Every structure is written in structure tokens, then in C-alpha cells.
Amino acid sequence: MSGEKYSFFDVPEDDVSPLFTTRMQEAAQVGCLRGVFDGNGITTDWLNGNEALRSPAFDAELRDLFQSLQQDGPLKNFQSMLQFCSEHPQARMSDRRTFYAFRIDTQRYRYHLRFFPQKRKFHIFCYQADRIRGDLPQPDFNYVYRGRAKSKQDRGDR
Image (cartoon, rainbow, N blue to C red; front, side, top):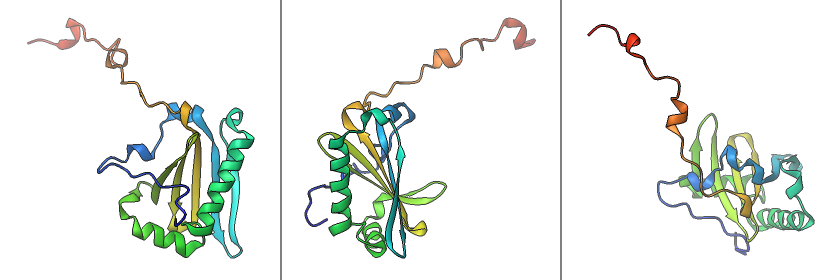
């Protein structure tokens, strides 16, 4: 984007984890703006997340971000999205479907952008930054394997 009001997060080399959130961070999700390029431009809809986090300030920032992405960014038109994706091959992710993952951080919010060029669609997942947990818990293997201790009877003859 030429204005650089909203800059894309640079992912550390070989570490894509900052581009994703976990189930434990769902409480921080304000919602998701979905869009598709059709013959009339872009059609969008909103999927609610944690409705208590949605505020007029958030709505104003999301509207401004979306307008910036449309004016001089990857959401100007479908060709702009294709070009943006081809210029960022490191953002290509393959799972069930191939998509391109990006992140934009602001003072209060974090936006995870997913571009699906083959489907002509995109998702902007919106999170309240101060509610995203950075300290993810480590698994407790003692809890996982409790009750599975083998008794001497189960070991058989040696």
C-alpha cells in the first residue's frame, strides 16, 4: 500500500506462527469480515465473534482499514489481490486449500488477512490485541497419561 497507514507485519524467517491464533485466543476475536470479488466489485458480510468487544472505535478503524486496502492495496480489485499474492510467495500456505496469510497490527487491534485467489475471496479476522494470549500453556503430559500406568500383571512373563 502506498500510504502505509497500515503496514503488513513482517514474519520472522521460517516462523509462520505469528500469522495464526489458537482456540485459546478465540475470546479475543471481535469477528470476521468476509468478502468475495464478483462482477460488481466486492460483496462482504460480517461474522460475529465476541460481540462484547465490538465498539464504535473498532467499527471506525475496520472501516478505515478496509477503505485503505481498497484504495491503494490488495483489495482494490481482483487483479490487485493476485499481484499482491504473487509478490509475496513466502505468505503462501497450503492446507486443505491454498491461501495467502498476512497480518496487520494497530495500537488496539490485530487483523489476520487470508486471501484465496483461486476462489476470488478473502477473510479479515479481527482481534482485540490486549486480549490475545502470548503465553500459551505447555501440555501437561502427566495429566494426559494419568490412569494409564501399567500394572505388573499387564507386563506378561519375562
